Image 1 (tube, rainbow, N blue to C red):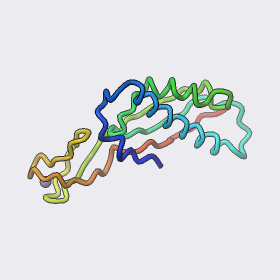
Image 2: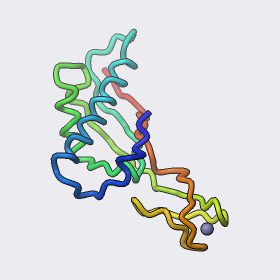
Image 3: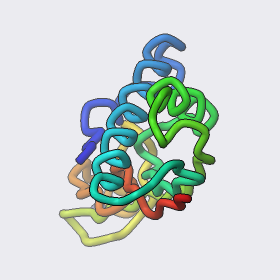
Length: 133
Ligand SMILES: [Zn+2]
């Protein structure tokens, strides 16, 4: 789903408008996914959603919750509590095999100095659970 490949290199304060757009597009994507999951079920209201978000996605949880309300307006997903668990970023150096926690935009291996790391965790937005009534 969301790869975050390009967005991951944006500085965190790359402009409030951009940041809002970022959360809104993710919220819209997630709401679509939730509504698709509800299809064929007799659900009137989504009470809560649990999301797992990679640290490299740079998502502002508060902004995402606000964006959720915008994206979910008029659907059963409106009013759902949005709970976010952030997953730590992990990278593995392709040069020496060291595993480390990468900084956003800087994947230089702390052991050998090679800029040749594979990101193994910390990307993506995953819908974990849905609570409905
Ligand atoms: Zn290395």
